[in-house]
Length: 263
Image (tube, rainbow, N blue to C red):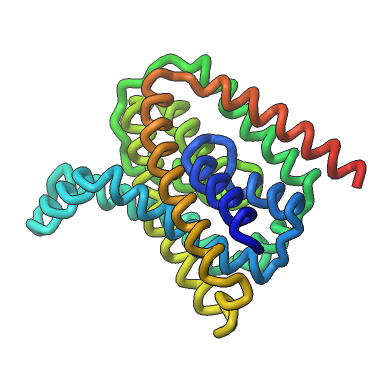
């Protein structure tokens, strides 16, 4: 992997991690186009996912600081309740990561037809969501668990994590701004945990197979684009403008399916 490929994939990861178009699906498509080897893809994936987590921490720094400060009073209040809901939402994806990891990884083989089909699923969710009335409810524990299940399903390449979780929250009648906030906060620990698992499996010379320059370029690209996309997505959800991303996923998914069938 050279620095230009790292720049492209870093930008793809940063923008698509938060925009509802499936970062995993786009990275799979990018891997096929750029012919990135599996070992290089794993190392690079760890780095760029770490960059996107850092961008979330910066965007939601005040929210996280206030939540933790109030929760550490060791009393049951709104902040501690919210943190418990976030933890509950992470349980389904945690189960998938611990017990079904090999099965999930079997889908990351550059199968464009499968990725395209899952992008069509994402497109359908986003299009339907666009016609949903604005909700007024806060997230309950049951809501958190249901949203967590959709996050677990979004480990499949082509199903957008943010698209699936935000759409589910809106289907449940959750306020738009709250749906976006919960969706972004609930992914922090799962991404970090997945990175630690990948690091544990990585060979000692794994990072050296790419080189530090492409890794740094990819990290910087994912971090900066992640900051932009995260803030942009918050504005998009508040305004209810998800239809355009649904159309985008429909077009890209159709192209991916056609390209896969012609391979």
